[in-house]
Length: 219
Image 1 (cartoon, rainbow, N blue to C red):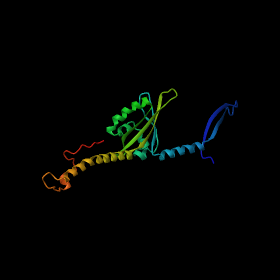
Image 2 (cartoon, helix red, strand yellow):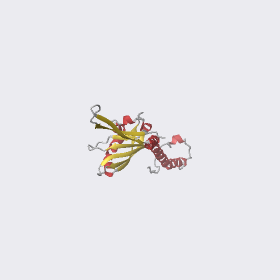
Image 3 (cartoon, helix red, strand yellow):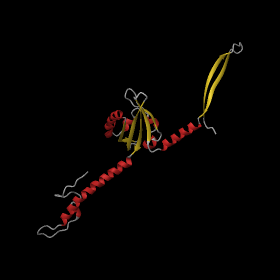
Image 4 (cartoon, rainbow, N blue to C red):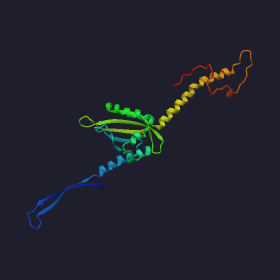
C-alpha cells in the first residue's frame, strides 16, 4: 500500500519539420515511492515532540552570529514559547536570567574553542517564571574542518536544583543542632550556690546561638 510518492518531470522540445506542428512537446520523468521515508520522518517528529529534552541547531556564520536553524517542537511545552517566537533575534539572550547572562555569554567563546560545553542557567518562561536549564552543546565542523553548526539540547533540571537547595538547608539546620543542644544543657545546670531555676525555652532564646556556644562548621 503506497501512501506517498515523489514525481520529477522534465519537458523536452523537439522540432518535427512539419508545417502543421513544427514543435513536439514531450515530458519525461520518474515516480518514486517515498512511503518509508515519510514514515521515518513522522516517527522522528513524534519522538522529538514527546522527548523531555529540547533539541536545536544553530548556524555558525563568519560574522560570529549564531542564528537558530532548527528547534524541536517540544520547546513550547517546556518554556511556553512557540518555535516561531524563538526565531526572533534576541529571544534567547533576553530571556536568560540577568544574574546568569554574563557568565553564559562568556562561556560561549570557550565552547567554540573546546568544541563542546555543558552549562546551567535560569531561563524565563513565557508566563514570566523561570526554569533551570541544562544546556549541552557540541560544535559540528564542515568537510574543511571549520565550525559549521552547533547542535545542542536543553533539559529542565529545576526539580534537581530545588532538591539540592532543600538538602543544603537541611544540612545547615543539622549543623546548628549541636549548638542548640549545648545551650539547652547549660540552661539545665544549676548555678553554684543557687537553686536551679527552670526557664521557658522561649525565654532562654534557643532560637539563637548562646554566648560561649562552640562554633559549628557550615557548608
